Length: 118
Ligand SMILES: [Zn+2]
Ligand SMILES: [Zn+2]
Image (cartoon, rainbow, N blue to C red):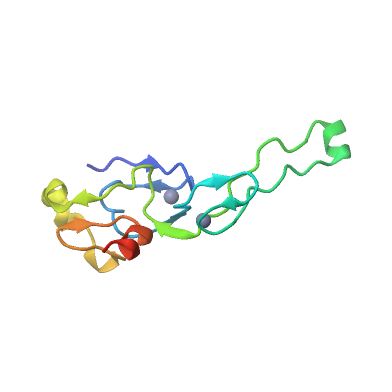
């Protein structure tokens, strides 16, 4: 269980189990609207920086990264709730003092879910 994965949001390496609950990443819980930006925070993907000189030199910008997330979360693409039983055998490897939010017996992997549950 020491595999390292690359987080699709921040490009950092992370370990699926030991990074649970540590919120080392950020994401947007809302939906993206081309006119209004993200529904959670209103941030928009900026436009490609069009510079005529760069285009002539073949160095035009073709990729614009998404705006930084507004809500802390764990790394990885799967942010669903994890039941503690499924990771029980690995619990002793997890540094609980670094957890940022959880509710027994479920671990909430993002602040957003933690704050909006009732
Ligand atoms: Zn957002
Ligand atoms: Zn990440």
